[in-house]
Structure formats: structure tokens, C-alpha cells
Length: 263
Ligand SMILES: [Zn+2]
Image (cartoon, rainbow, N blue to C red; front, side, top):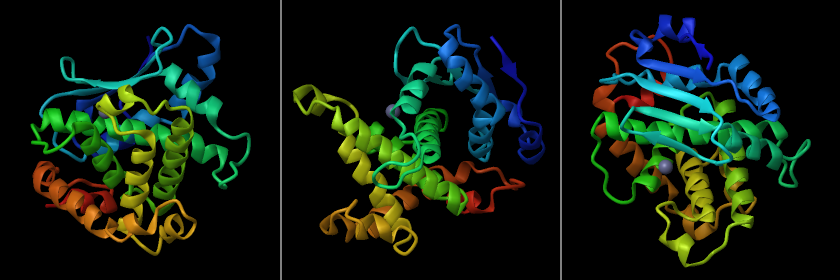
């Protein structure tokens, strides 16, 4: 097991950043080593930790990449307050990514990094709900997607667009192989096409000009698009009310993110 120390810059910018611990377990399977190295070199977990570190966490939260005996999964475990993402899941994202560019124009880079950040922010949302005792009306899986979308939409404009495009591409790709049977309807998660439309709706609702293309190019039906501004405002209001009060008093970075967190 290889444990990377908390990012020095993040520690400087976010007091008590030690409360977020990141672990890049070395995979046994040779095919995952490249993924492990790339994730570690790009300090992916440190970046997500720095975002979540803008919130005053009552206990330490661990982020871990690990090999899961063939399981394509990611989860938050409240018993040991840790987010785990399996190399198997990361590998499936890499395998499903287009060689250069998808027919919809999504680049390979966005098709990999988009879902990676969407997944990490989704699991981080479960962690915030648990650690901050956030009350949830409705399905927790939907709420985790909405909070993840809200946070990602406050990244830099280029990063936000990357996660929206790449995340939506991932949901669309997953949807094509998803059996729409009773089991899918019974699942705690929404169907992949629902998650696709929820994400594109939040993006469009956050900024109709910047994300006008999702409606113009037919990735969001007109009937849904009309109410996306209100859908976005509803999530932003709940977020400011329930998570905003836990924001650090004077976080030293992430002005755009601070706006998302501010009550
Ligand atoms: Zn979830």
C-alpha cells in the first residue's frame, strides 16, 4: 500500500487539510498500474480533497483508489468514513472512452476525466451528508448526483465543461448497455438516462448561455429545459442552507467554490 502525503499546496491553502487523507493503493494487476501512476501523478484525490476540505469536517475523511477483485464500483463507507473507487471502475471508463473523439465531439480526455470527477464528487456528497448529518428529502442517490453537479459547476469554466461533457457521455454510454427491467426500476440509483438528463439540466439551469448547446444540440428536451433554472436554484438553495454553514470561515482559495458553499 502506498500512502501519499496530503498535498502540500492544499495543506497550505486549507487549514487542517490533514483531515482529508488520500491513499493510492498499488494494484497487483499490471493493467491497472498505468492508471494508478496517472492518478497519483495528477494528484486527482488531492484535488478532490482540497475541494471537500473547504468544508469543516468533524472527522478525518479518507479517499482511496484500490483493486476490488473484479468489482466495478465506488462507494462511501460511513463506518470508516472513507470513499473508495476501484481500479476496475476506472479501467472500464478508460476502455469505454473514444480513441480520440466521440461522434458527439467528446474528447478522450474529457470522456475519462469527466466521469472520474463526477464519481468522486458523488461519493464526496454521500460523505458530506453523513459527516454533517444533512437531512435529505427524496432519494439519497439523486441528492448525491445533484450536489455533485452543483459543486462541479463551480469549478473553473473549463473544468466544469469537461466534467459535464465527460460525465454526460459516461451516463449515455452506460445507458446503452443498461437493461430496462424491473430490477433497474427498483434500484436505489436512477436510470442512466435519468442521471444524464439531471446532469445536463443542472448545467443548463446554472447558465443558459454557457450550456446553451445542451439544449440547442438536443441533449435536453425543450419541455425539461424550461424548468432547469428552477431545478438548479432549488439545489443551490438547499446546499447553501444545509452545507453552507459548515464552510470554513476564511478558506484561502477557490473563490468560485466559496460562492457555492456560502449561505
Ligand atoms: Zn451513490
